[in-house]
Length: 264
Image (cartoon, rainbow, N blue to C red; front, side):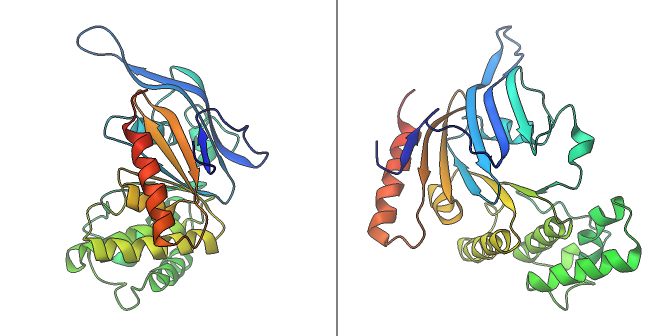
């Protein structure tokens, strides 16, 4: 095990934990009768202000863990907490504290860019002038000044995803969750957006969890890279120091690949 790698169940959760899985398990019924185990004994904590990338092969439980954080499922056993709340039982208490950047932009085609960014603020009850001012500010920060009145069909894929990111930050959430958020973009556009996104998360003091199947993306985003293996559990964790040379990154890349591939 490399010096910067931690096996599953290695360290206790820090005092400033904002996301925690404690022995979390999730089983789903199947047509065959025997339940399918998506998560098994998942232990993972995320500290305030941390950016954690979760990487793993298809079917390793990443999406199930993501949906538990959103309160879409209740764990079969164990515990999941977000900002001290049970996201399933206390869903309403977390409104406005969590925002999501999805794989697709999920923009409403009949609303302009600024109207799409302002949508969540509208649900929060902000007045029209205030929410549009916030929306324009965030569109500007995402490089879309002058595109406020454009409809989704008038924007490129990268621009639409920028609108989605602006919509997320406009809510001023504590926690930002991302599910393969740049996987549908060309590599150059995705690389630029990843860099801008990470800088915004850091500048705004947010906590981030980024789900990906790409080791390269995980390394470029995470302060810490967490490797999932099936049935959903943490196989290894890697703290990624800033400013690594290419050879050092290559070493981490190989170690993460080995952790993903090793049989449980």
